[in-house]
Length: 178
View 1 (tube, rainbow, N blue to C red):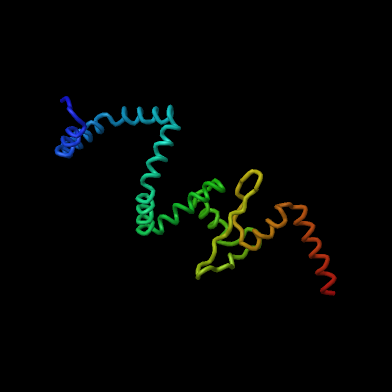
View 2: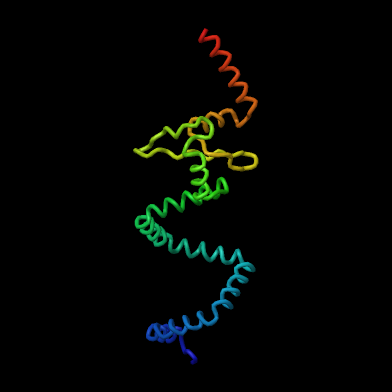
């Protein structure tokens, strides 16, 4: 069918939208693998084009996107929190929330250094134990309470400084308690 103008094409599309959608869906179902392979190859070959197209679309639809995200979060508040927490743990420490729970259970919910549960409570909720990790290798060592985390952080994770501080405290404890 030859179109004389884009207005004709738009009018035809508007009039036959359900028929066109059904045809397109049938084509997609039949050729799904081929279409996905083409899309993947195109995305790999033209990453800048794809990124700029998405940015342009996002700029044009930013308020719509943000409104939809707000609606989704309001409906799925617990899932949203879990997603953000999982993403944070994965990005920062390379572990999932499930990995955190395994470590937490292994430590019986207690700090790996002082053996006590987290003592800080915010808005009636006990704060979670902090993930302790080696800053050079980013390997997770365990879960520790806020106080112990601050302590080893202030000592820059240096065992010599920590041992020296322990000796200093022991020395002064003996003097003060004689």
